[in-house]
Image 1: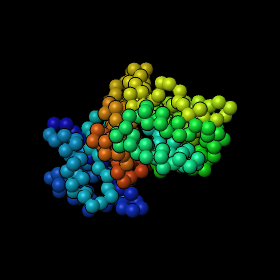
Image 2: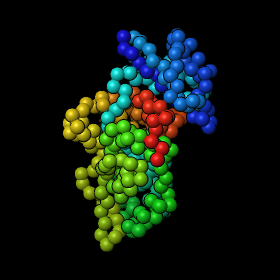
Image 3: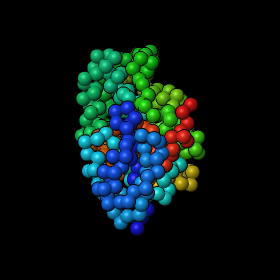
Image 4: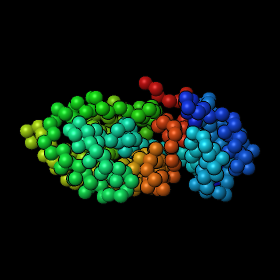
Length: 298
């Protein structure tokens, strides 16, 4: 049998995690539960051996928690804390899709967001979709990108804490996006990532050409980055936490030891071994066994 840890995560504002929730889960799984609280009213662990799969344990826990805003995630205890964090940016580390915000700033937001939704759901090939959206933004001035970043882009709750806590405890953290390095460079700096990778915009006379520099960074490039970092650092993909929200993240999510869909699309949830639907990004710290007292809140 494998020894698993089932982590339950609430939210102290809309729905704190209470003993009634843990009792429901223990009853569903027929466990004599001993709880380890990682944060009062917010997160706890149940550790137990089982012949069931992690996916089945999670499924049963979510049945017990149906109708609540409590997340549940099950992974093996062994190797729980990860040494690499690789994260998507748009709608994962930030609240927005940057390309949609750029489109809205020049009056083509509805056209661009329609294409973005098709990409996130896996209905459209990413490189083709990116080229189509870039063509709609031809002629945009560089100064408008600065304005969009300052006025429209916000960091998701828990993002800084996730990155800085993992970094403080020795993990290497990289932001990998199918978006643009103009934004990843700035977001990586303010949230604490070691490095970032994204697509490069092309300008002539400080105006977008409507084209994107090749090669386009898409889902296979994210997986390549994960594999390359593991080789450089002498680690395995099982040592990686990967997080994203859309179909473009599927390959890296499938490869990682913890592959997390964060408020993700159905296409990604079907491939992830962890799904966070309610909590903020600090849930990914609790899943690794970090106590709130260990969080880097600077």
